[in-house]
Length: 86
Image (cartoon, rainbow, N blue to C red; front, side, top):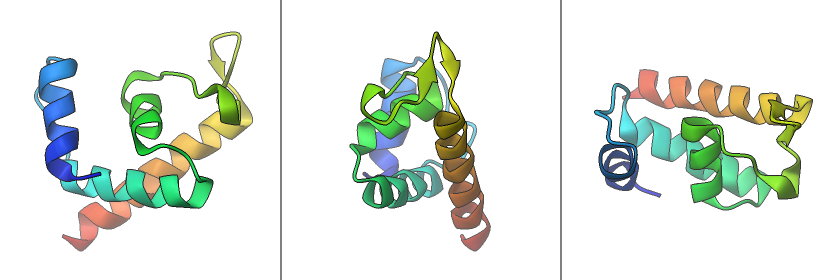
């Protein structure tokens, strides 16, 4: 996943202006996707739209599971690591 893809998704699909570093976000999502062996787009949807990923049980009755919260926290930590490195 590239920063341009993330930026395009936020602008076109969500109708918003990105407030964060799209390149750092793309790097964080790519890292987590490799670690979890999951689709990058699904992780992006989880983080940006709170869309559930059924295969890894991120939500239960519309709320985050412990696993879902852990994944989101890991994505955020990776994002801040990449953001501070640039």
